[in-house]
Image (cartoon, rainbow, N blue to C red; front, side, top):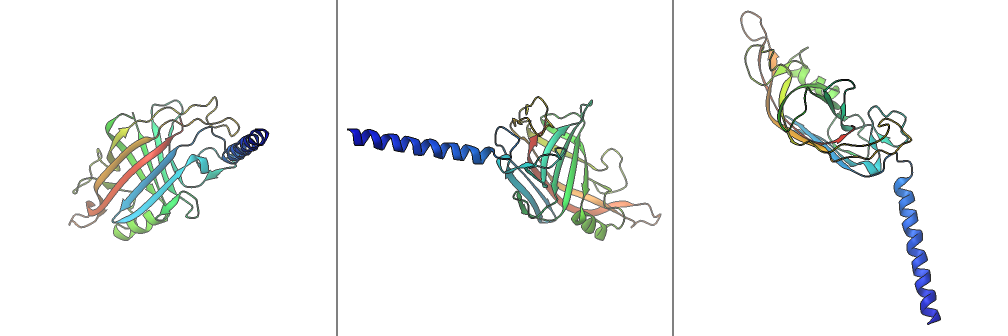
Length: 228
């Protein structure tokens, strides 16, 4: 009986130590209180650019510059102070980052004037060496000017995409969201997508006016961390 009691006591102590070590390992260097999966995939003319990770391995670097545990590649949406607008950033900036899956240097910034479920007509801007090289090779000096229909310039759709929001997610909470010392408590991710054709500008007509007639196939899919 004494031997049985001693054995159970030792086993209990071992499990207790193991649990404490795991908790210490999970929390060391992390300024958040829960884990959340996130990812995005941007496919342009068949080239796949993908980031996928979990906050337990670090927070994608955005405005939280002072965190000790961050990753350069971003997949997050934030609230613009004093406005109803929301800014979604999808970015590959470090191919050695633990959340990097595939693709090259690029950044996609999507501004939602009033984020809602369903189709949102939003401004989308592309940056990065991959985007510059690809777009400039097809439409010199006009890589950040495009629209979703072919033909002459149309201001109402210039640099805008109909992004479909399928899940608004839930609020992330923190007394001070941008503080490196108080734990972030991430809500469920914002989910959305787009797939279609955009057109870059050429100078193919006789008058020299730019015509948007260079097609590019593009798709965007994301599950973005809510930083608000």
